[in-house]
Image (cartoon, rainbow, N blue to C red; front, top):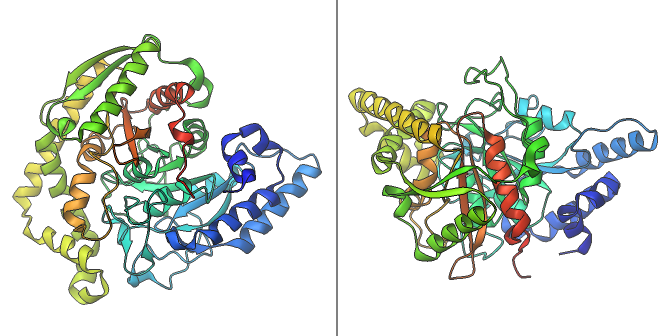
Length: 458
């Protein structure tokens, strides 16, 4: 890795002083050198260079620039980038050109961020391995024989390999947080409805969110403050005041009430992952938080009901395509979609009611606490070869899914290596609208650890 790229990522002051053209060239060179990761679907060098040149001209003229001036961004390929191929990771949309920027991309551009390309994903954002039959198997930069997670695997791999400063992903059951954990970066699933999904292709509309990935929580916070805000054009938007993250990011965790989740899916983790969660909890305690173990009953059942909801919504999205041209789906996604046919109306009604009870239970726990911490994934990144997608997805997303169902903000940050030397993640959860608290706690941990600065060898 070139020193210039590392400095741009790790030193915000140096980043602000750099010319946008130099930043873009450094990252385009990195992208070209890591083509074997299959992190990108489409790279947009000409557009990125033109945007950088215009930004540098404004700077030289003394014009004001936005808070993300010169930041290089990869955008998951199910989020529209105007004028660029938007395939949604699928053969059905292989030649589709996005007609306009998604609202989240528009907001990033308004802050002077520069899009360098679209990131690979699990086909139709419906799986957690990003073994995409149409755009190549995305690989984990820490070990190219391992999955980067998914469905935002390209976004996680691109940030983890320093191919961009940040990326946009989408998260239904864990699709931002899982790649963040497995690729050693920070990623936020925002409060449901707080970031517009207009211009984003759905996976499970009642759970879908758009959110940022970056190496540091500080950068995730800056992105979140740009992205968040009610969009009346979004039918899933929630008109709720959100607390800006950056102003209080350095306030620390002293006095915060933090629960370490126990029982159910929260205990179904590898011993080394559990040790890393405990070490993070001990650091939060040392920083002045009040940390105790907390039980949230019913997490196993919530996972089962969540699977019913996601399968029903995915089949509804693709029923006509599945009936008309099933052969155009990748085999794993086709098998998973077919599972939706087993769900009856009574099953869906029962699952919906159970999910609402779970949401209420989590809300009650978070009424008595400021934050809950858990592992993000139960282990480190699985091998690509021999991993059956449906089973692998179910295991990787068990802990993340339960908080997707609760519609709460959830942040994943690096928590240190597992016994195999690969990254693990810590998940930090708060009440709806308090994304700022998750980021504040994550930032506090990153002031006393350097796991987020660790990079793969080579």
